[in-house]
Image (cartoon, rainbow, N blue to C red; front, side):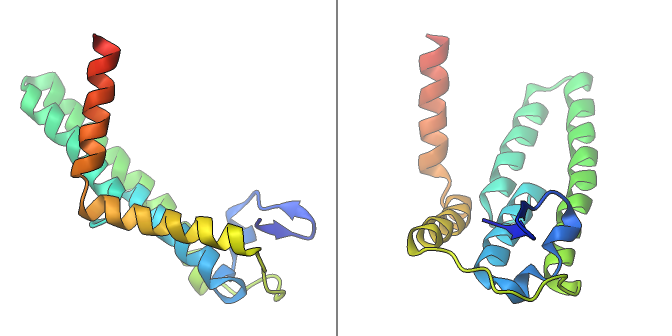
Length: 139
């Protein structure tokens, strides 16, 4: 979907000015990047919070150390994710041609963006589904 001179986007710089070329792509990609960084109220925040809570509830020095390590790695990852957003929204575009997508692609992207937000606000159903899957695997 995201192409530059006939080649798929392979580098962060290929996304420069994406917001001007396709606000939908930029918005959904930004929502996903914020979610991966663990920004509330997106689903990635709840996922990271759940892992950290489980580590801390397990008790013991090794688990606290793992939780601290996970937070440090999350901060390093957030730098990368925020850099992608900065390039999409604040860098000058290398191309000015608009990116047009078929209706079905726009619909799927919109649903994806909405789910990233909704599952972060109301994660109970997803967590119950995951718990059932884990119980089935361990049975």
